[in-house]
Length: 183
Image (cartoon, rainbow, N blue to C red; front, side):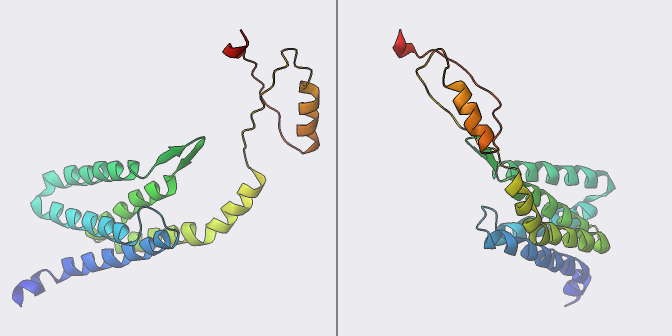
C-alpha cells in the first residue's frame, strides 16, 4: 500500500492523460479517422509516461527523452498522411497526434493548467470550428477540368472560355500537346 501512495501523483497524471486522450479520440472515432479513440489515448498516456520517467532519469536526459517523443510522434503522424490525386488527406489527424503527445508531455510535467487550456482549444477546433471550415470551403473549391480535343488550331477555345465565364469558373491554364498517335 505504501508503494501505491508513493506513486499516487504519477498514477493521477496517467489517468488524466487517459481522459484527455479519450476526449480527443472520441471525435476522431466519430469521424472514422485512421487514428481514433484507442490511438489517441495511447499517444497521450505514452507521452505522459515517458515524460514522468524522463524526470526520474535525471535532469541531463529529460530534454533528450522529450525530443525523442517528438521525433517518434512525427513518424506516427507521417503515417496517416496520404496523397490522393491533387488532395492530401490526414493532415488534421497528423496534427492531432502531435498535439495529443504534447498534451501528454504537459501532463507528465505537472502543467495541468496548460494541458486543460490546450485541450479546450483542441475541442473548439475539432467540434466548433468544423462548421466554419465547411462554410468557407463552400466558396473556395478548386476543381481540375481536362478537355481533350483534336483541333490543333484551337478554334474551340473561345467557346470553352465563354462557358467557364458564364458559370463563374476560372479558366487558368491551357496546355496544348500533340498526341503521339496523330503522327
